[in-house]
Length: 233
Image (cartoon, rainbow, N blue to C red; front, side):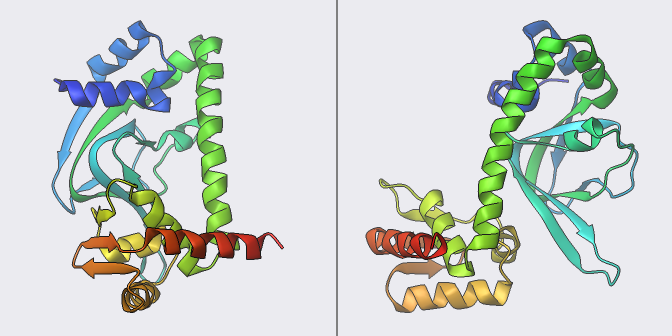
C-alpha cells in the first residue's frame, strides 16, 4: 500500500495514531488498506464483522442507521483527519453498529483492528497517551452536546456559520448537502431552509446554491452572545 505524503502527515496527527511510537506506526501502515470511495459508495454496513478501524484522509464519511420504517438517521459526519469505528473495538464489539458511506468522493485508511488492539495491550504508555488525546475529544463532544440540547436551531446554525468562516474570509462553501448539514446540527431540513431565508431577508447572509456569505458578521456574533446569555440564566 502506498500513502501519499499529505495523507501520511494527516494520519500521524490523528489521536488514534498520534499516541503510537514510530515503529508501531510503521508496523500498522504495512498491513493497512487504502480505500478510494466514489460518492455514495459503501465502506461497510451495519452488522458487518469488525476487522478494521478507519481514518478519513480526504472527503467526508457519513455514519448512519436505518430506523424500522426505513428512514435514515445520521449518527455522525466524519471529516478528513478523524477516525471512526475505534469505539466499537474499545468496547469489545464484534460488529459495526452503523452503515458508513462516502459523501462525494473520499479516501479512507483501514487499520487492522486486531493488530492495533495488540499494540495497546502491550504498551501502558501508549494507552495513557491515547486516553489523554481521547479525553480532549470527549470534552469537545460534550460542548457539542450542550449546543444541541441547550440552544435553539437558530443559535446552532449561527454558531456553525461563525466557526466555519474566518475574519479574513466570510465565504463558506458547503462540502455536504444542506439536508446533511441540517442533520449534523439536529435541525429539520425545512427548519434550516426557513432560518437561512430569514437571515437572508435580514441581509445578514447571502445564500447561493452551496455557497453562504456572511454579510454582517458582527451582528451575527451579537445574536449568538444574546442567546448564550439567555440560556445561562
